[in-house]
Length: 96
Image 1 (cartoon, helix red, strand yellow):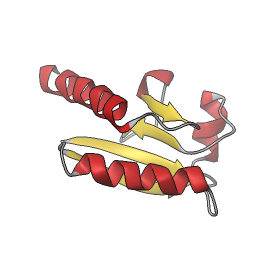
Image 2: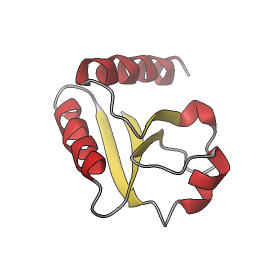
Image 3: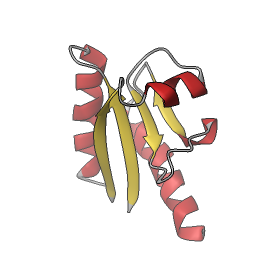
Image 4: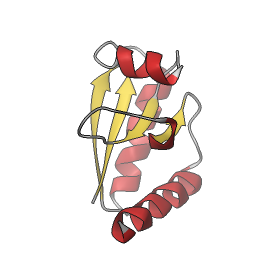
């Protein structure tokens, strides 16, 4: 199972689309994700140098995120591309 964190903000059209996209992907891939408000993760956004949402990250229990944990930020990938990226991440998790 791949755990993800989706950082969003209220009244964000791209964030709403990101949630729908993740719901569709979840039907086909073993992922789970949680949504968090950008103000809760402002330190993560600042540390990574991002000022926009949505931001999709691989879940990190210690919240010690790096650029390697970023799946996408701002603009949403096409569903086929997101599936491709997540399948690759799932393979990495299996090998670890």
